[in-house]
Image 1 (cartoon, rainbow, N blue to C red):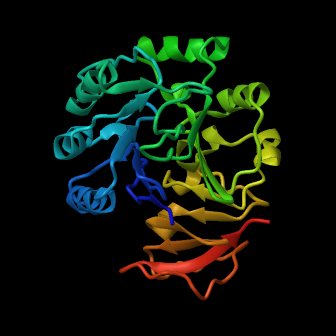
Image 2 (cartoon, rainbow, N blue to C red):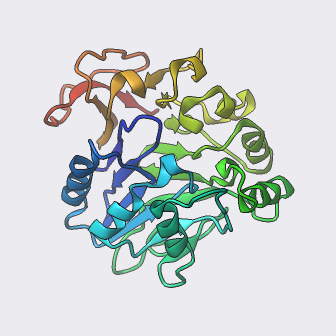
Length: 298
């Protein structure tokens, strides 16, 4: 069994994966004072017993690294995954960004994300433990548009388009994260990478129209579910024609693999949208969360 959780953290992103192998992964963090302790406590509980823990940082905007100091102080990050970059900030640097740079530039703790990268035990198995099922689909580091995005970030501009594309596969199910990659970079990603069906896609840039997934890419991904984030409703793209869960009304979202089913739970008890889902009478129970429905592949 594997668990994937998307936290409801307002205008930001934070996820964890409790793998069905000896791995635990956190993707980004956005920890405000009112939720920080609860989220860190949960991560401590869920990561207990896992031999390998890693932190994947899609890009160093505040809404993706807020609370990084608290996270690192609590858990002591030993495996920090990021794209190679020289991002700078105009004006005063936050303590979280300073910590990001320290981790990014630590040759003993950091690992570069790029298309096709391999590492124990991110996606390689050995006699000691199985891999986590994670793969990096993007960036292609010599791509001209991507190199331009790196230059923009190095000059103090937006680092949105340096975001990698991360895929997690477990059994029949798969998940895709693209950070805050904007539509122009997604089009480049789509044109240079062979993409395939993915069960759950987390809409980039918190579901904003500026991060709209191009139709050509969506036709390849054919997602069972699109998770639309917590940007202001006036800025959201609701992906008409696809089954969606909107996080600003669903709250926290938990996915749990359960044989042929991917069971889905939400923290907002009043949320009831079940388009594209089936009922699994053998779903688990999670305190404070409502069983929404399940997805099947095949």
